[in-house]
Length: 313
Ligand code: GH3
Ligand code: MG
Ligand code: MG
Ligand code: MG
Image (cartoon, rainbow, N blue to C red; front, side, top):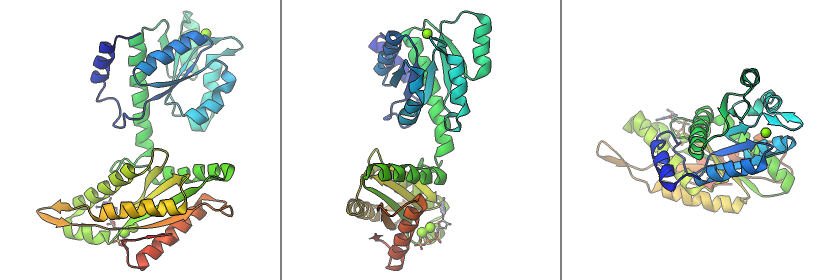
Protein backbone atom coordinates (compact mmCIF):
# COMPACT_ATOMS: atom_id res chain seq x y z
CA UNK A 1 0.00 0.00 0.00
CA UNK A 2 0.95 3.61 -0.37
CA UNK A 3 2.60 5.17 2.66
CA UNK A 4 0.29 7.76 4.27
CA UNK A 5 2.90 10.44 3.66
CA UNK A 6 2.87 9.74 -0.07
CA UNK A 7 -0.90 10.07 -0.20
CA UNK A 8 -0.80 13.41 1.58
CA UNK A 9 1.88 14.67 -0.78
CA UNK A 10 -0.12 13.42 -3.71
CA UNK A 11 -3.37 14.93 -2.57
CA UNK A 12 -1.53 18.21 -1.94
CA UNK A 13 -0.14 18.36 -5.40
CA UNK A 14 -3.51 17.64 -6.96
CA UNK A 15 -5.37 20.01 -4.69
CA UNK A 16 -6.08 22.38 -7.55
CA UNK A 17 -6.90 19.63 -9.91
CA UNK A 18 -9.36 17.89 -7.64
CA UNK A 19 -12.77 19.44 -8.01
CA UNK A 20 -14.25 22.06 -5.71
CA UNK A 21 -16.70 19.49 -4.44
CA UNK A 22 -14.10 17.18 -2.95
CA UNK A 23 -16.63 16.00 -0.36
CA UNK A 24 -17.97 13.70 -3.07
CA UNK A 25 -15.36 11.02 -3.78
CA UNK A 26 -14.65 10.10 -7.38
CA UNK A 27 -16.41 6.96 -8.59
CA UNK A 28 -14.38 4.43 -10.52
CA UNK A 29 -15.55 1.17 -12.03
CA UNK A 30 -12.97 -1.62 -12.26
CA UNK A 31 -13.70 -4.45 -14.68
CA UNK A 32 -11.25 -7.32 -14.32
CA UNK A 33 -11.55 -11.08 -14.21
CA UNK A 34 -8.72 -11.21 -11.65
CA UNK A 35 -10.91 -10.52 -8.66
CA UNK A 36 -8.19 -10.39 -6.02
CA UNK A 37 -6.18 -7.88 -8.05
CA UNK A 38 -9.29 -5.78 -8.63
CA UNK A 39 -10.11 -5.86 -4.91
CA UNK A 40 -6.54 -4.76 -4.19
CA UNK A 41 -6.96 -1.80 -6.55
CA UNK A 42 -10.22 -0.97 -4.83
CA UNK A 43 -8.51 -0.88 -1.44
CA UNK A 44 -5.64 1.26 -2.71
CA UNK A 45 -8.03 3.74 -4.31
CA UNK A 46 -10.15 3.72 -1.17
CA UNK A 47 -7.09 4.80 0.84
CA UNK A 48 -7.02 7.95 -1.32
CA UNK A 49 -10.76 8.49 -0.81
CA UNK A 50 -11.71 7.27 -4.28
CA UNK A 51 -14.74 5.00 -4.40
CA UNK A 52 -14.29 1.95 -6.58
CA UNK A 53 -16.70 -0.81 -7.56
CA UNK A 54 -15.47 -4.09 -8.99
CA UNK A 55 -17.10 -6.18 -11.70
CA UNK A 56 -15.70 -9.56 -12.62
CA UNK A 57 -18.70 -10.64 -14.68
CA UNK A 58 -19.09 -8.22 -17.61
CA UNK A 59 -22.81 -9.01 -17.81
CA UNK A 60 -23.30 -6.92 -14.67
CA UNK A 61 -21.98 -3.83 -16.37
CA UNK A 62 -25.17 -2.05 -17.38
CA UNK A 63 -26.79 -2.35 -13.96
CA UNK A 64 -23.67 -0.90 -12.42
CA UNK A 65 -23.31 1.89 -14.94
CA UNK A 66 -26.86 2.97 -14.17
CA UNK A 67 -26.70 2.63 -10.38
CA UNK A 68 -23.13 3.71 -9.69
CA UNK A 69 -22.56 6.39 -12.36
CA UNK A 70 -18.80 5.92 -12.60
CA UNK A 71 -16.64 8.85 -13.64
CA UNK A 72 -13.95 6.55 -14.99
CA UNK A 73 -13.86 2.93 -16.14
CA UNK A 74 -10.71 0.85 -15.70
CA UNK A 75 -11.02 -2.03 -18.11
CA UNK A 76 -9.02 -5.22 -18.36
CA UNK A 77 -8.49 -6.55 -21.90
CA UNK A 78 -8.09 -10.28 -21.48
CA UNK A 79 -11.02 -11.87 -19.70
CA UNK A 80 -12.41 -15.36 -20.22
CA UNK A 81 -15.41 -15.33 -22.56
CA UNK A 82 -15.20 -11.60 -23.16
CA UNK A 83 -12.69 -9.17 -24.53
CA UNK A 84 -12.34 -5.78 -22.92
CA UNK A 85 -12.07 -4.26 -26.39
CA UNK A 86 -15.51 -5.57 -27.36
CA UNK A 87 -16.93 -4.50 -24.03
CA UNK A 88 -15.61 -0.96 -24.56
CA UNK A 89 -17.28 -0.90 -27.97
CA UNK A 90 -20.59 -1.99 -26.44
CA UNK A 91 -20.36 0.72 -23.77
CA UNK A 92 -19.65 3.30 -26.47
CA UNK A 93 -22.82 2.33 -28.37
CA UNK A 94 -24.90 3.80 -25.55
CA UNK A 95 -25.42 7.57 -25.72
CA UNK A 96 -25.75 7.81 -21.94
CA UNK A 97 -22.19 6.64 -21.37
CA UNK A 98 -20.42 8.57 -24.09
CA UNK A 99 -18.75 10.90 -21.65
CA UNK A 100 -17.32 8.28 -19.27
CA UNK A 101 -13.63 7.81 -20.06
CA UNK A 102 -12.48 4.23 -20.52
CA UNK A 103 -8.89 3.44 -19.58
CA UNK A 104 -7.56 0.00 -20.42
CA UNK A 105 -5.56 -1.48 -17.60
CA UNK A 106 -3.88 -4.53 -18.99
CA UNK A 107 -0.76 -6.64 -19.04
CA UNK A 108 -1.20 -7.22 -22.76
CA UNK A 109 2.27 -7.10 -24.36
CA UNK A 110 1.34 -7.76 -27.97
CA UNK A 111 1.86 -4.51 -29.83
CA UNK A 112 -0.86 -5.13 -32.42
CA UNK A 113 -3.44 -6.04 -29.84
CA UNK A 114 -2.60 -2.94 -27.79
CA UNK A 115 -2.93 -0.77 -30.88
CA UNK A 116 -6.22 -2.45 -31.75
CA UNK A 117 -7.52 -1.75 -28.24
CA UNK A 118 -6.56 1.91 -28.45
CA UNK A 119 -7.96 2.28 -31.94
CA UNK A 120 -11.37 0.85 -31.13
CA UNK A 121 -13.20 2.34 -28.20
CA UNK A 122 -10.98 2.99 -25.20
CA UNK A 123 -9.47 6.37 -24.46
CA UNK A 124 -6.07 5.41 -23.13
CA UNK A 125 -3.95 2.55 -21.95
CA UNK A 126 -2.17 1.79 -18.69
CA UNK A 127 0.17 -1.17 -18.38
CA UNK A 128 0.07 -3.63 -15.54
CA UNK A 129 1.74 -3.96 -13.18
CA UNK A 130 1.05 -0.52 -11.76
CA UNK A 131 2.40 0.66 -8.42
CA UNK A 132 -0.11 1.91 -5.85
CA UNK A 133 1.18 5.44 -6.26
CA UNK A 134 0.87 5.26 -10.05
CA UNK A 135 -2.63 3.87 -9.77
CA UNK A 136 -3.82 6.65 -7.45
CA UNK A 137 -2.19 9.34 -9.57
CA UNK A 138 -3.49 8.02 -12.88
CA UNK A 139 -7.00 7.56 -11.55
CA UNK A 140 -7.18 10.91 -9.70
CA UNK A 141 -6.16 12.90 -12.73
CA UNK A 142 -8.52 11.11 -15.10
CA UNK A 143 -11.49 11.15 -12.74
CA UNK A 144 -10.96 14.83 -11.88
CA UNK A 145 -10.88 15.74 -15.53
CA UNK A 146 -13.95 13.64 -16.19
CA UNK A 147 -15.84 15.44 -13.43
CA UNK A 148 -14.69 18.85 -14.64
CA UNK A 149 -15.95 18.09 -18.14
CA UNK A 150 -19.21 16.75 -16.79
CA UNK A 151 -19.71 19.83 -14.61
CA UNK A 152 -18.99 22.11 -17.54
CA UNK A 153 -21.73 20.37 -19.50
CA UNK A 154 -24.28 20.05 -16.70
CA UNK A 155 -23.72 23.04 -14.44
CA UNK A 156 -24.36 26.73 -14.66
CA UNK A 157 -21.09 28.66 -14.41
CA UNK A 158 -22.35 31.49 -12.16
CA UNK A 159 -23.87 29.31 -9.43
CA UNK A 160 -22.53 25.80 -9.98
CA UNK A 161 -26.14 24.56 -9.92
CA UNK A 162 -27.56 22.18 -12.53
CA UNK A 163 -28.56 23.76 -15.79
CA UNK A 164 -32.17 24.00 -16.96
CA UNK A 165 -32.15 20.80 -19.02
CA UNK A 166 -30.41 18.74 -16.34
CA UNK A 167 -32.75 19.75 -13.53
CA UNK A 168 -35.75 18.92 -15.74
CA UNK A 169 -34.18 15.54 -16.38
CA UNK A 170 -33.81 15.14 -12.63
CA UNK A 171 -37.54 15.79 -12.09
CA UNK A 172 -38.18 13.05 -14.65
CA UNK A 173 -35.83 10.59 -12.94
CA UNK A 174 -37.26 11.20 -9.48
CA UNK A 175 -40.85 11.07 -10.72
CA UNK A 176 -40.20 7.64 -12.25
CA UNK A 177 -38.69 6.52 -8.98
CA UNK A 178 -41.66 7.81 -6.98
CA UNK A 179 -44.08 6.08 -9.36
CA UNK A 180 -42.15 2.83 -8.93
CA UNK A 181 -41.70 2.95 -5.17
CA UNK A 182 -44.68 5.03 -4.04
CA UNK A 183 -42.26 7.27 -2.13
CA UNK A 184 -43.06 10.91 -1.58
CA UNK A 185 -41.59 13.56 -3.84
CA UNK A 186 -41.77 17.34 -3.87
CA UNK A 187 -40.69 19.85 -6.47
CA UNK A 188 -40.05 23.48 -5.56
CA UNK A 189 -39.85 26.50 -7.84
CA UNK A 190 -38.25 29.66 -6.47
CA UNK A 191 -38.16 33.15 -8.00
CA UNK A 192 -36.52 36.24 -6.54
CA UNK A 193 -38.85 39.17 -5.91
CA UNK A 194 -38.61 42.44 -7.84
CA UNK A 195 -35.24 41.44 -9.12
CA UNK A 196 -35.25 43.95 -11.96
CA UNK A 197 -35.28 46.69 -9.33
CA UNK A 198 -32.25 45.16 -7.61
CA UNK A 199 -30.32 45.26 -10.88
CA UNK A 200 -31.55 48.78 -11.64
CA UNK A 201 -30.70 50.14 -8.18
CA UNK A 202 -27.43 48.38 -7.41
CA UNK A 203 -26.11 47.18 -10.77
CA UNK A 204 -25.93 43.86 -12.54
CA UNK A 205 -22.85 42.59 -10.62
CA UNK A 206 -24.77 43.11 -7.37
CA UNK A 207 -27.65 41.13 -8.88
CA UNK A 208 -25.22 38.32 -9.67
CA UNK A 209 -24.03 38.35 -6.07
CA UNK A 210 -27.62 37.89 -4.89
CA UNK A 211 -28.19 35.00 -7.31
CA UNK A 212 -25.03 33.33 -6.01
CA UNK A 213 -26.13 33.80 -2.41
CA UNK A 214 -29.48 32.19 -3.21
CA UNK A 215 -27.75 29.24 -4.83
CA UNK A 216 -25.41 28.88 -1.88
CA UNK A 217 -28.23 28.91 0.66
CA UNK A 218 -30.25 26.36 -1.30
CA UNK A 219 -27.28 24.04 -1.51
CA UNK A 220 -26.54 24.50 2.16
CA UNK A 221 -30.08 23.72 3.31
CA UNK A 222 -30.87 20.83 0.97
CA UNK A 223 -29.91 17.23 1.57
CA UNK A 224 -27.38 15.28 -0.44
CA UNK A 225 -30.10 13.37 -2.28
CA UNK A 226 -31.84 16.59 -3.38
CA UNK A 227 -31.06 18.24 -6.68
CA UNK A 228 -31.15 21.95 -7.34
CA UNK A 229 -30.85 23.82 -10.59
CA UNK A 230 -30.90 27.31 -12.01
CA UNK A 231 -34.06 27.14 -14.05
CA UNK A 232 -33.84 30.65 -15.48
CA UNK A 233 -32.13 33.98 -14.71
CA UNK A 234 -33.30 34.33 -11.08
CA UNK A 235 -35.44 31.23 -10.97
CA UNK A 236 -34.49 27.97 -9.29
CA UNK A 237 -35.94 24.46 -9.14
CA UNK A 238 -35.29 21.97 -6.36
CA UNK A 239 -36.22 18.29 -6.52
CA UNK A 240 -36.77 16.73 -3.09
CA UNK A 241 -37.16 12.95 -3.05
CA UNK A 242 -38.89 11.33 -0.06
CA UNK A 243 -40.11 14.74 1.04
CA UNK A 244 -43.80 15.42 1.64
CA UNK A 245 -45.61 18.61 0.73
CA UNK A 246 -45.66 19.68 4.40
CA UNK A 247 -41.95 18.95 4.84
CA UNK A 248 -41.12 20.89 1.68
CA UNK A 249 -43.29 23.76 2.91
CA UNK A 250 -41.46 23.87 6.27
CA UNK A 251 -38.06 23.66 4.61
CA UNK A 252 -38.89 26.45 2.17
CA UNK A 253 -40.29 28.64 4.93
CA UNK A 254 -36.96 28.30 6.72
CA UNK A 255 -35.03 29.12 3.53
CA UNK A 256 -37.33 32.07 2.80
CA UNK A 257 -36.66 33.60 6.24
CA UNK A 258 -32.92 33.00 6.09
CA UNK A 259 -32.73 34.58 2.67
CA UNK A 260 -34.83 37.58 3.69
CA UNK A 261 -32.40 38.17 6.59
CA UNK A 262 -29.24 38.28 4.46
CA UNK A 263 -27.82 41.82 4.26
CA UNK A 264 -26.20 42.65 0.95
CA UNK A 265 -23.85 45.61 0.79
CA UNK A 266 -22.87 47.42 -2.40
CA UNK A 267 -21.05 50.76 -2.37
CA UNK A 268 -21.84 51.16 1.33
CA UNK A 269 -25.54 50.73 0.63
CA UNK A 270 -27.25 47.83 2.37
CA UNK A 271 -30.29 46.05 1.00
CA UNK A 272 -32.35 42.90 1.38
CA UNK A 273 -34.00 40.65 -1.19
CA UNK A 274 -36.94 38.30 -0.76
CA UNK A 275 -38.06 35.19 -2.58
CA UNK A 276 -41.33 33.59 -3.56
CA UNK A 277 -41.71 29.83 -3.88
CA UNK A 278 -44.24 27.34 -5.19
CA UNK A 279 -44.42 23.69 -4.20
CA UNK A 280 -45.81 20.69 -6.05
CA UNK A 281 -46.07 17.22 -4.58
CA UNK A 282 -46.29 13.86 -6.31
CA UNK A 283 -49.78 12.31 -6.34
CA UNK A 284 -50.75 9.05 -8.04
CA UNK A 285 -52.58 10.92 -10.82
CA UNK A 286 -49.42 12.72 -11.92
CA UNK A 287 -47.96 11.05 -14.98
CA UNK A 288 -45.39 13.42 -16.40
CA UNK A 289 -42.61 15.63 -15.05
CA UNK A 290 -44.00 18.74 -16.74
CA UNK A 291 -47.22 18.36 -14.72
CA UNK A 292 -45.19 18.68 -11.51
CA UNK A 293 -43.31 21.68 -12.88
CA UNK A 294 -46.55 23.32 -14.01
CA UNK A 295 -48.11 22.79 -10.59
CA UNK A 296 -45.05 24.32 -8.88
CA UNK A 297 -45.14 27.22 -11.33
CA UNK A 298 -48.85 27.83 -10.64
CA UNK A 299 -48.17 27.83 -6.88
CA UNK A 300 -45.30 30.27 -7.44
CA UNK A 301 -47.64 32.52 -9.41
CA UNK A 302 -50.06 32.50 -6.45
CA UNK A 303 -47.20 33.41 -4.08
CA UNK A 304 -46.39 36.38 -6.33
CA UNK A 305 -49.96 37.59 -6.67
CA UNK A 306 -50.62 37.15 -2.93
CA UNK A 307 -47.89 39.72 -2.27
CA UNK A 308 -44.53 37.92 -2.71
CA UNK A 309 -42.05 36.90 0.06
CA UNK A 310 -44.07 33.74 0.71
CA UNK A 311 -44.30 30.02 -0.03
CA UNK A 312 -47.44 28.57 -1.61
CA UNK A 313 -48.36 24.99 -2.27
P1 GH3 B 1 -41.10 39.41 -9.77
O1 GH3 B 1 -41.15 39.69 -8.32
O2 GH3 B 1 -42.44 39.46 -10.40
O3 GH3 B 1 -40.41 38.13 -10.08
O4 GH3 B 1 -40.26 40.60 -10.42
P2 GH3 B 1 -38.87 40.52 -11.17
O5 GH3 B 1 -38.37 41.90 -11.40
O6 GH3 B 1 -37.96 39.61 -10.44
O7 GH3 B 1 -39.35 39.80 -12.48
P3 GH3 B 1 -38.74 39.42 -13.85
O8 GH3 B 1 -38.73 37.94 -14.01
O9 GH3 B 1 -39.54 40.17 -14.89
O10 GH3 B 1 -37.26 39.96 -13.85
C1 GH3 B 1 -36.18 39.14 -13.66
C2 GH3 B 1 -34.96 39.95 -13.87
O11 GH3 B 1 -33.82 39.20 -13.55
C3 GH3 B 1 -34.77 40.40 -15.29
C4 GH3 B 1 -33.31 40.24 -15.58
O12 GH3 B 1 -32.70 41.44 -15.89
C5 GH3 B 1 -32.74 39.72 -14.28
N1 GH3 B 1 -31.75 38.68 -14.50
C6 GH3 B 1 -31.92 37.52 -15.17
N2 GH3 B 1 -30.77 36.81 -15.16
C7 GH3 B 1 -29.86 37.54 -14.48
C8 GH3 B 1 -28.48 37.33 -14.15
O13 GH3 B 1 -27.84 36.33 -14.46
N3 GH3 B 1 -27.86 38.31 -13.43
C9 GH3 B 1 -28.52 39.45 -13.03
N4 GH3 B 1 -27.84 40.35 -12.34
N5 GH3 B 1 -29.80 39.67 -13.36
C10 GH3 B 1 -30.47 38.73 -14.06
MG1 MG C 1 -7.53 -10.48 -17.27
MG1 MG D 1 -38.41 37.57 -10.17
MG1 MG E 1 -38.27 35.45 -12.97
